[in-house]
Image 1 (cartoon, rainbow, N blue to C red):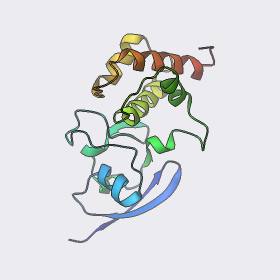
Image 2 (cartoon, rainbow, N blue to C red):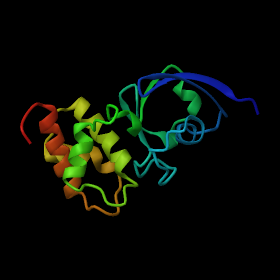
Image 3 (cartoon, rainbow, N blue to C red):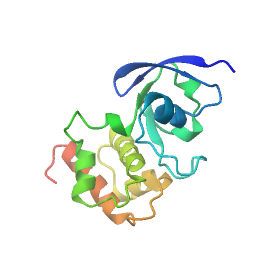
Length: 160
């Protein structure tokens, strides 16, 4: 089967790759591009572990075909930090111990970024609703929500 040539922007950098037409974006990111932060938890869009941003929109990369990335701008967990400087969301996840095994953490952080880009001042209920598509078996969700709310305050320029 012939591979398709795809040109996109990934984490702010121009990227080109070849992929099979049936290959998921998750598999392309992990196996072709070499970005392994997004995880395959369910392969059905139910767990959020593979979350990425596509043109600023939250997407489960297991449900997106790699060929659909043509001309898009994609942000993965690897593109959230600025070099060695953690994004406030990442910093607050660490400070609140909002991670344990870490499997779901990349998806939760990407989903949190999508939330705070759209709504910089969410209520706790809005944050819980937004993150409902991300499953975690370790943390219980309270630490995650506290991290999200503190990150939102920091990103708004408030002390947190």
